[in-house]
Amino acid sequence: MATLVYTGITSLDGYVADAGGRFDWSEPDEEVHAFVNGLERPIGTHLLGRRMYEVLSVWDTMDTAGESPVLDEYAGIWRATEKVVFSSTLTQSVTARTRIEREFDPDRVRAWKEDADRDLSIGGPHLAAQALRAGLVDDVQLLVSPVAVGGGSRFLPDRVRMNLELRAERRFGNGVVFLRYAVAHRR
Image (cartoon, rainbow, N blue to C red; front, side, top):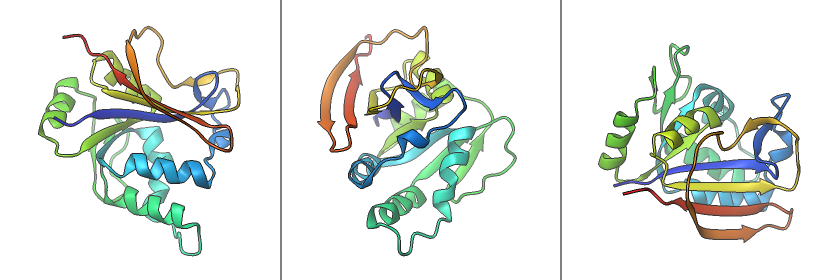
């Protein structure tokens, strides 16, 4: 069975975007971006909410010629990965290897995990909240930025209790800290 991984770049106070919807404070430097590429390489399918998909879809056609090799590598990783976008409003995808699902169905996602030969990731705090509440997320990975934004879109939802086991940690030169936790599922 594949693992469902929830990864995000957060502020120290737990937000992926500030109250104005901005996340420019979270842009990874070269060292962090190279590390993120390593996290993304084993992923076979991204499960994305509409907003997260719209943010990331630029990687499908971005011209990375002359850019950092790290950016070029990420674009290649993104293009090679299957994508499932959960949206009730999108009528078609703008990226290759993408399909749209109208609603989040925990049983369907559970079946995808059972059938997958590579791990799945879930992106976007609203979609991830549904997966966390359904007990589908196996790993939670945070890249904590050294900034407090005071409010906005939370990385973890309210009213979800999880017991977590720290599996990995790493510090970066720019003050970002990576934390990977396994979710201790009740049996």
